[in-house]
Length: 334
Image (tube, rainbow, N blue to C red; front, side, top):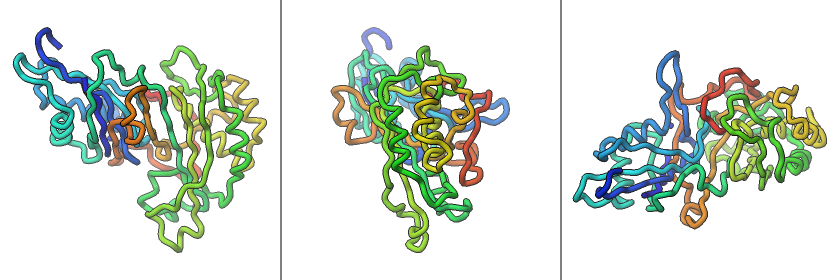
């Protein structure tokens, strides 16, 4: 069994088996649904990887099991997935290096790249074996109009009209979310989870270094911020809904104390918690596994870049808070 690492911001008895599990995403490769139009089949990272894996000529079809599934428009700096490759009798298993090269050769999406493959135990499971998942959300302030943000940043952050965020208040509000709670108030409809109890280990708000894509004269006006959340697992759209609430605190619409009230309400349909931050500002930063230290310093497994008009949510106005709809992406976890 092998573990894959990839980048991009989209067994039978007697036969040797290779199992690659993990792949990360870059500031751009979407995990999950990348395009949905009418009655067409949804196409995502998993589809492209499995199509490339067909060229490995496995005895049985290769299926990827992804650690974290995301909505269209969400980027993956680090994700993970496992798979088994069963070769014909007498053929040796693929080495991690050969498997990495072969998948990259046959990947048809320009925004997906396999970084590394790791051999793991046959009972490894990319989703259930994960001990930590970290998401980051990027914000930009001082952007009254969408065209005032660099074209290279427009699908990498949530551009806010406001020049100022009360970061201290946001940090205070984030403290109410830390620990083990019922996060029903931050869960979107359609979640496959049987329990809404999660343990949030880290929630931070900090300045982001100046973007290399912003001109010097623009950097005096624009400021970038990063929100980071770490947990073993998250509910469907939990991070984007927590982000929307914390931004409301930063803008003065809510107080830190009200965030605690919202959390304790366990009501996902309340006035404020139905807001969802745009998908294009969210990045799956890392997925970690016990005993796989190499993944800690190198994004888990496959990076992806969300390219093409169908592969992401279309950004609206700079402060585009999206209300819940009744049609969530089935199977998505963020």
